[in-house]
Length: 248
Image 1 (cartoon, rainbow, N blue to C red):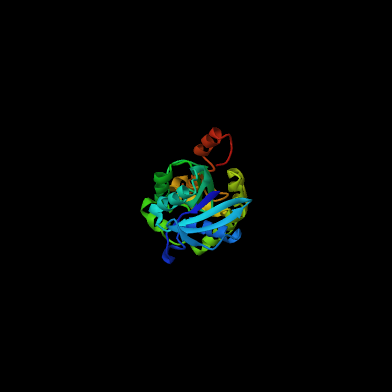
Image 2 (cartoon, rainbow, N blue to C red):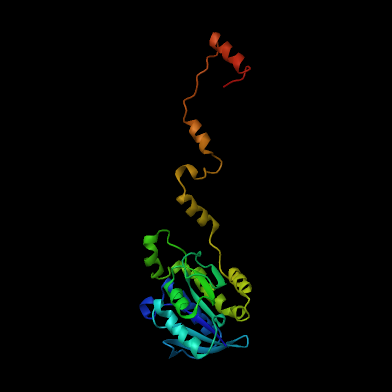
């Protein structure tokens, strides 16, 4: 038996938050694999099902994010499972939106739900980190994490959640690389032109690339006054001698 835990905050007001993408992943798996109806147990919502012949307990802690370990810990102790039997789905600020990375162990990285799980279970469980992107500055992080996904995010979020559900069997088999590869094929990539534009906007003026076909050096030179060269007289003869008879 394995446990798949999706992290989030309970309540309709949080349902579409970026911080609740773990709940969304659990719900997608629940729909795809015909799990039992959700029921209340272990201070969470749980459902039973089977994926690739392995019995799975889905759990969505209802303790609020920073106490997630209480709920998941109860379930783990009840079924006498080890950390290696647990996979946790949650949001990751330090990954580009739509990118998924899977690893076993590691630090909480500032995530309160993972910090709680580490306190109750240790660190040796599988972490399925779902990228939600970083707003760019620390002051905006709280609002970004607890803000709803934008409508435009549906372009990558919906296929990502479907891919998580469709390929959950890779996690059951312990094939983390296979799981990540399948998701990377399913999720649309960010428009390269948009990424380049965003990068250009963040560069200092002197580091920005010049417009196509024009260099900033040429633009600077074009602003210099033209030199008037006499056509006859001693000065003209001297200049012709210096420049080998070439025009300016």
